[in-house]
Image 1 (cartoon, one colour):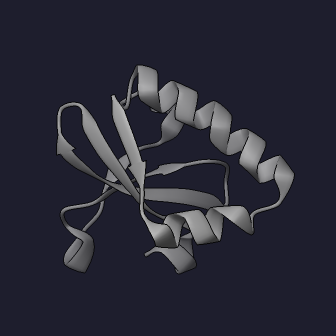
Image 2 (cartoon, helix red, strand yellow; image 1 turned 180 degrees about the vertical axis):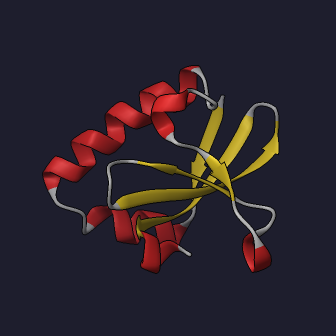
Image 3 (cartoon, helix red, strand yellow; image 1 turned 120 degrees about the horizontal axis):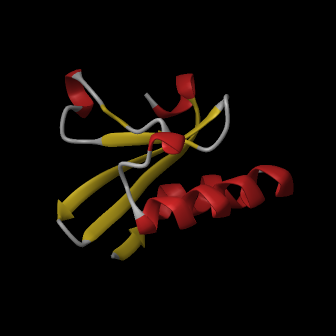
Length: 85
């Protein structure tokens, strides 16, 4: 799978605590193997974000992304539920 990140995602990811980044890396490994793995709690978004998806890094942090095709994903945003949605 080809994975790209928006500038917004990169800026916000840099500011995350190291422990959260480590969890995000583990979740990303799962995501790259099987994006629909239940451990990710992945879900399609609604409303203005109806073309986007999100998965959980932990109970607080989410990664919002978009599928471009079966093998290309763009990470759009990272943060708490209120920050990302």
